[in-house]
Length: 450
Image 1: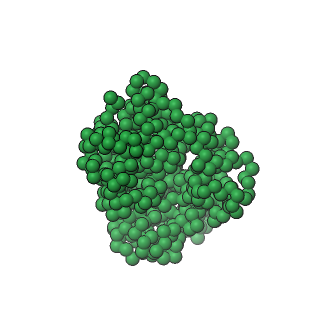
Image 2: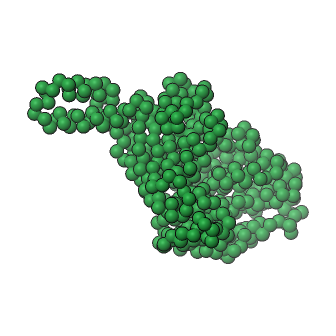
Image 3: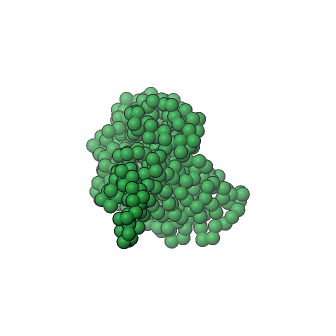
């Protein structure tokens, strides 16, 4: 992983904790959550406060995520709202925590100015053993505290102020007045500057989880649907409890997945896009498929310099040996450039899902995450939309491909996320999220037909 680290392609965009004040706040929260403090002088944290350096020091990657449920968090700054979240066992965790920070921004701003805020995303179970455990998670409640008990004190102050205002003899109670003064000195004027987060309940919605071999859970579909990524486990112990009303689809059943995505209006064909250049996108995908083939045949040296003609020579010499995905996409591109609909492949065709992207809806990221899993030769989409799988596959590639992909992403991704988003997905989310790939206008190694 050293190439990814050197190019800031892994553990990037994190917040550095380097000052004594922030380090002390983090440690006091960590001691209450985990029972330990870190001796590190500097470390980085993600959106939830998870630190890869602290995890390594503790030899515990799950120190803020025990059993992969009820993810804990430590907030030192509201900047964390837009950071990535590492080692997430539920894809929904980042969106929920970001919503919590935004929904309670005024209160959390006041709290983090004085102390750390910590808590957890509480669901209905403590450990996922069966599908029943997993599908029972419908709601998340976020309970937050501070090491100095500011939220608790603010609640007590609000209660005492209410009692004071309702009592006709409160002015005579010196003890009650002193308690209000003492609490106000600790938390401030809670009437003008709220410090109690009030929006704390969230719907789980649709999500991906790494539990039980990997599952996509579409709760809100017309017929709730589970797409599972591991081997067909429907007969095994974890799948014995048939969940009433849920349709089960293995990742290997491409036709069933295609029907589900189409019936639910979750995807759209690249060929039908008006605001982008679908032919350019297909040429780039052809490029990625060819790069994988060259890597498998120890021929990346022939195209290492990112020179379009070098790849063209490689394609001419190896056209018969290129995988089915390449020929599917080449046929779709040829039809598109001749004024046709861009090819109509059957779902069983290896190139079918390469011709799709998520439609515009609230689960766009989740669907693109699934499509990236179904199109693993497109390493760019894999890196953008499904980083955990990208890192896992990266470990299986030969050294040549690792170096090539790392250099490619460093050249055409780093510092250009907004531009790349416009290139791939239009202008709807140009500057949001840890997105990135080749920007518009960067060109492609794959020549146009003819």
